[in-house]
Length: 512
Image (spheres, one colour):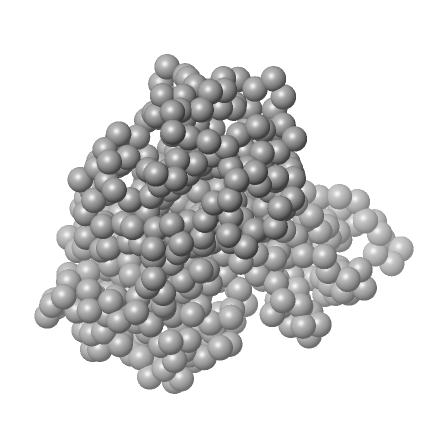
C-alpha cells in the first residue's frame, strides 16, 4: 500500500474532496478514506497526519458516525473540521449540543492564543461556517485558540497531544487563509517535508503498470478527450506495443471528432489506433430511452461489450484501461465515505462479472488539473491537454429525453458554433467547460413573417479548477448575443437560446 503524507477520514461532507485538493496544491500528497477504515489500513498508509472531515450528521445521534479510537494513539497529529471537531470533543470527554443560533456563511476569526496552526494568519481573517451543532464543554487538556461572534470555541487545541479542531471549513475558498492553516498543519505540525510532484507520481505509475501488466497486453478505450489521451500516452510510455488503443465511434461525438482523434493518434503521436464503428449498436440500444441514469448505464455496458469483442481479436489481452478520475469516483459511489451519491459515471464501479480481464485506472487518484500536468510531462500537445472535458456518454446526456439522429445533428451544429465563438473571443482558454444542451422544449417564435414552433438550446459555460465545484462564466453580453444569433440563424429547428447561470453546487456541470 502506497505511503500518504496526510490521510483524510470522510464523514460525508460535500467539501471533503476540497481538503485533498488544497493539500495537493501545496505539494502535499493526501488521500481520502472512509471514516470506518480500520486502524490497520490507516497505519499501512504510514501517514504523518490525520484529518477528520465535516459531515451532515450529529455526534449525539444514535447512529452517529464514529472513528476507530486507535487513531488518537497513533502518535501523529489530528485535525478535526466541523463534524470532525465535534467528534474529537466527544471522543476526548467533552460535550456537543444543538446550537441556539445556526451559523452559516462568513465569520470573522479572532485568534486568542498563539498556535502553529495559525502561523502567518491575520487576526480577523474571514472563515466559512456551516454548522447547527456546537461544542458545549471542552475536553480536559483542550483550550480555545480562536473564537468568532457566535462561536466561543471556533478553534480548539490540545498542544501536548497535538490534536486540533476547527468549527469552520478551511478548505473552501470563502475561508480566505484556510489554505495557510491546512499547510501549517501539514508542514509545521505534522512535519511533512517532502514536496509531491507530478514527475514522481508519473514514474511511480509507469513502474506499477509494468509490474502489473508483465508480458500481457492492455486494451485502452480512447475517446479523444484529455483523460483517455493521457492514459494512452502513459501506457504507451510504460509498455509500448503491448498497448492496444481502441477508439469507439458511438455516434454520440461532437462534429468532426472521429477525424480529429484519428489525426492526433495515428499521425501526430504515431500510436497504432483501432477504430470501431459502433454507431448503430449504441443508437439502437438508446432508442426510446429518456432516463439519464439508464442512458449512462446502457452506454457504459455497450462500451464494455465493444471492447470485449475487439479484445477477442488479439491474443494476450488481460487488462482494460480507463481514464477514471478522482472526482468520478467521489461523485459516483460512496467508496470514500458516507457522502451521498450524486450520479453514476460510465467508467466507475469495476467490470461486469462476465468479463475476463482486469481493470487498469492509472488516473484514479488524480484531479483534472493534475491529469493535464501529467499529459504535459508525457509530451502531449497543449492543444489536446487544454481541451475542455467531454463526458464519456457524450451528447446522449446533453439531449433531454430520448436520443435520436436528428436531435444529435441539431446539437452538434449548435455546439460547434458555441465553441468556435468562444475560441475566437479568447474565452475558451479562460473557462473550464462549455457546451450546448438540447432541452426538447418547444416554444413559439417568429422568423421573417412566419410563425415557428421549434426547440430551445441551453448554453452552459463554467469556470472551475477541478470540476468538483464550478461557477457560471460571466461572458460579455455581446458574445452571448453573437452565439445566440448564430445558433438561431444557422441551425434548423432552433428558435430560442438560453444561458445557464447556476453554479455547482447546487447544480452539476452537466445537465444529466
